[in-house]
Image (cartoon, rainbow, N blue to C red):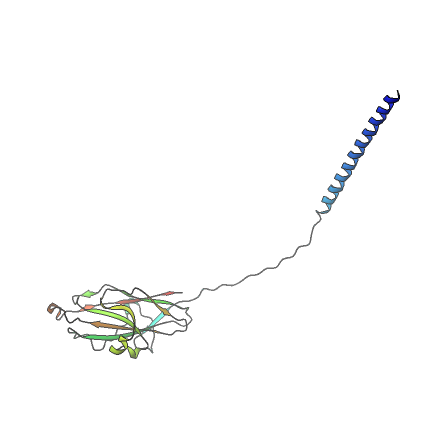
Length: 207
């Protein structure tokens, strides 16, 4: 009986330990749940805001035949280049020069401008030309042209456009173009008395 009683006492003691462990586990769980409950309290909030107003820039160009008086020239009112010597009596070996200035308009951003040639109309197909940039309107002469920056190669047909562009400053600093028209020495006799007309467009883009 004593051994049996000892076993029963040990069993009861074991059961008490298990119950005690369960109670402790439940209490621990309650503490965890209680801690979790305190974290749901509301917190204070604040914020900062920022905004802006945005305005697009303006871009435009204007041209001049004398380097002083600038204005807009549409396709229907193109500026008439003034060649010297006059191009009304061209002969083989002769070359005439004409200047045209382009600049950004007041308040415009900077950009680039490119010389684009339209299709020539007329029979004087042997006529050739070139375009260079010079330092001023007065430099559009044989000497000034010789030292200018190439825009369209000499000896080009009238329908040839520029491959590159020139920079237009936002401060309205002009770009001075010098056009050189020539009738080559080898022009055929069939060119006598013929005429041809050409319009150029100076295409500008911002940036």
